[in-house]
Length: 265
Image 1 (tube, helix red, strand yellow):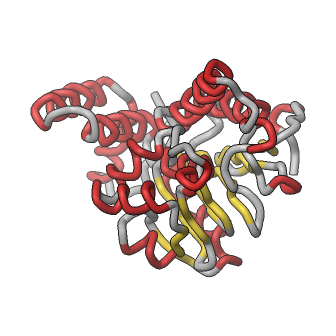
Image 2: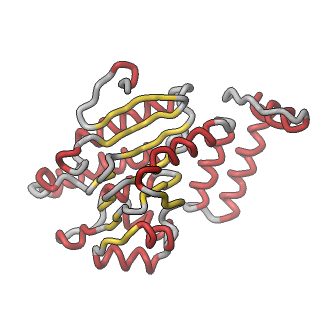
Image 3: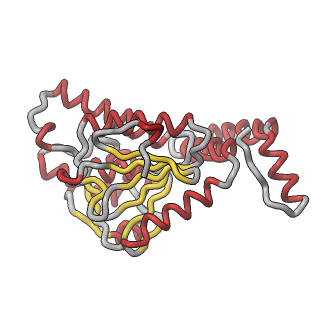
C-alpha cells in the first residue's frame, strides 16, 4: 500500500489503486474516534481526490471491527460553546466534502458506525456494510444530540418517524435493520465488504465522469429542491452533456455495438 503522492497522514491512510481513491480512518486505538486532525486530513484528501482525474470513485472505510465510533469524547467533553461550534464547522466541512464530491463515494462499513461515524457514512453515496455491523446515534445519552447532520440525513435516508426513534432513544441497531429501513444499499459477510466495495467502485468508475458528476448533483438536489426546480436543473445538466466528447463516445459506442471508453471530456 502506497501513500497518496508520497504524503503521510496521522489519522487516515490514503492511496489510489485502479482508479479508486481509498480513505481509511486510522485511529484504531480509539475506535477511529473523530477528532480535528482526522477531520482536517479527510477534508484535504477528499478535495485532492475530487480534482485528480486518475480517481474515478472513492471508497471510505475503517478497520475490520470498527468504521468509526463517533466523536473523540476525551477532547470534546471539555469544549465551551465556541469550541463546540468550531468542531462542528470542521465536521460539516468534511461531511460536505464527501457528499458534494465530484466523484461517487462508497462507504465500506465493518463493525461499529456510531454517532459521527454513522453521520459520515450517510454522507456517502452508497453504503455497503458487514452483516455484523452495528449502527446508532447515541448522543442523546450524553446530554446532546447528533450535530454532524444526523438529524438532517437520517430522515432523508429512512423516514422522519424512524429518525426520531433512533435520535430520541439512542438505541443501537443491526445491519438487517439498517437495510430494512433503507439506510444501507447492501449487507454482505464481513470478509466480503471491501471486495464488494471495490467491485462496485470499478463498475461505477467505468462510466462517464462528466455524466456521473451531473447525475450525482441532480440526485442530491432532489432532496433539497421542489420537483420543478430539480427537474429544471436536471434538464440543464443533461443538455450540457451533449457538448462533451463522452456523450458522443457513449452513444456512438452503443450504436456500433462496442464498449465505450470515456475520458471525462
